[in-house]
Image (tube, rainbow, N blue to C red; front, side, top):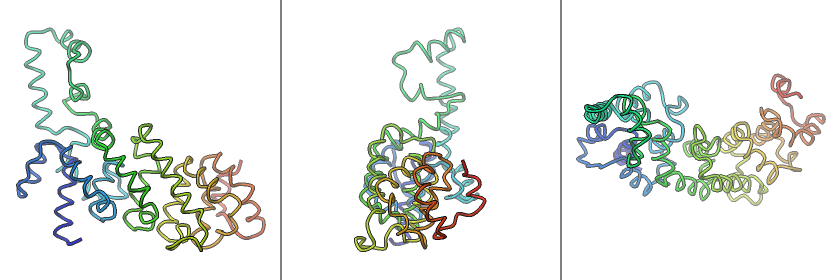
Length: 308
């Protein structure tokens, strides 16, 4: 992807994190007219597969999946993001003021207490957006993300790409972060649950299927041997017990000795390092035999922490 094209697309996809007024300011030089963020979401979906593999293009997706995460954004990036694109945590100052002014006009002839009851509880025609506003005219951040990520269909499309390109994403220096955030917790705060649980289970099974292949069956470097993919799968074992159970049952049970060296060894050792007792219990008997035989070794502090 050419640099200019990359920057152009990155600027286009980043805008959905901002307020409408922020859109106009951010794209004044691009002469783009955007009615709302969902217009941009539709554009994102057209180039979604390209974005998940792109160093910059993936960032808006990561911001929706895990807002303001220091793993993906530097302090300067986060400062710029908050200055230019405030509405993942608020609708924006101008919209808040507008909302307050409208509310004030509505309450001129009513008692404050009666108005509160009428606005929040009694008006069946109140729009979803109004109900989702919190104090100061700001929209609840979780609901904001849910609208843009889940309700728009973006997350479903993203999971479909993760299923279709699981091996490629896991081996990718940039794509691995996207698939990690999708699988690990279903997005920050479990935002993809329960709506997309079936899709996520399919993704878990697809990764396990790749891990379950023999070295000879794998057309590319095996996902348990590749540096990037083995690192990502190890993190998923540690952070997502549901995935860890699927991986063990479909790919690793009875086969751990085959993977007890190099990068794949770190994956199987992660089962004993897990904070989840069920995950540790699945692998304990088989891996203990390898430990007793001197084939693998768990760092002492991790072993002690997981005893019992």
